[in-house]
Image (tube, rainbow, N blue to C red; front, side, top):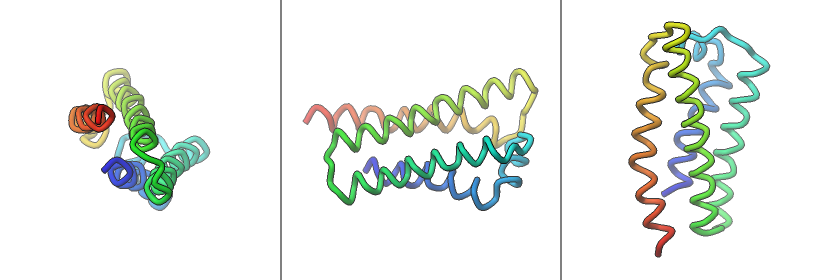
Length: 120
């Protein structure tokens, strides 16, 4: 399950950013900064590609949990960044406010399953 969630989440964030970067920045309420944003998008692409490798090469539940943890850490840090943007910069765009909410939802759903899988 983990690699599919990572591919879905990190992969779509990477593709959206790489294909529609300026529109994605505007939608969130950020000023486009190509160099930094491309680097962040490529990081998400690397995470998604690693999730595919974990699955295809059958590296096991620990590798699966590791890549999911990396994705969750990224989204947690990103959520904090979006929350700061909402408070400090008064960026109240819906997409900006959804990142913290969706990250918390993702953590709430995935962490119990990861713990259960690692205790088998």
